[in-house]
Image 1: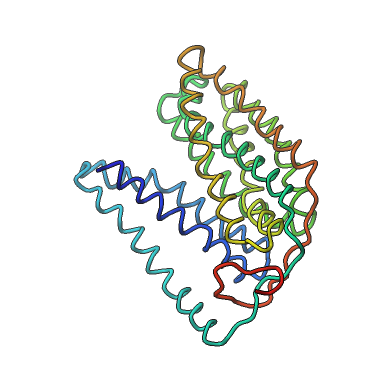
Image 2 (image 1 turned 180 degrees about the vertical axis):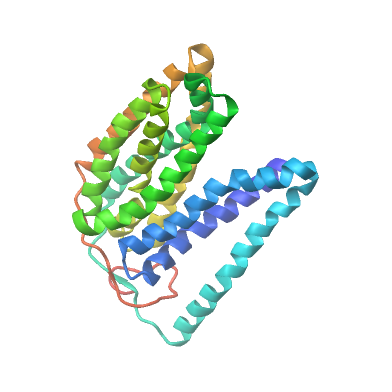
Length: 301
């Protein structure tokens, strides 16, 4: 029963993201900075979730777990004004919201592999960085907790920074240089010790999160006729596929050492950098007004 409810929760989260990213793109009228702030909301949720769970479960045990439904209910209530706005758009016969060129499926597939590599390295770090820092700094649990805080704080900074940088230099260029930064930063996480380790954790997190929202809008522009699908795939791969690699890292760590097991993560941002070198900067789709179509086509359908 527990696994069934976990799966049901996952379906709900997965169903939310494609449409929310599509509507956020329409509401922001294609602004990279606005999409970065939208992504920041989710990233802050990831960062505060462990604190929230601890605050609920520590004093009351698992019997207090139902209280964790409160954020879900609050999120649902916050969606109601958006739904009303969409209904008003329908009654006003809003025209097509997105127009653009043809789908570039090949580039979208390459971008999806970039997202997979990014997911593997971030999930690997978020799963094992606390234990790794404890071992490398001999600072105990407090050092590991501090490393996780730095990891998520860097993600918040990177999310906002990515939108601003993309407005000046372009999404592909900014993402490419971010992953190149990650190669050195993740290598520093694996090899460094002492206080410098926290600096490398911060740099790795910033480098991984600068492209976070940019990859969503890139996917939407590579598939302008299927914006919801593009949003679902890019966001879905980001938050899910990396989990498949974590058990493998754990098995390798048991057989060798955690430091050795984390070393292959250095290759992931390098692969992302190589793939991004082959991607063009797409012309952003033209966002004209709100639409309630389930999928808005490039021809205005």
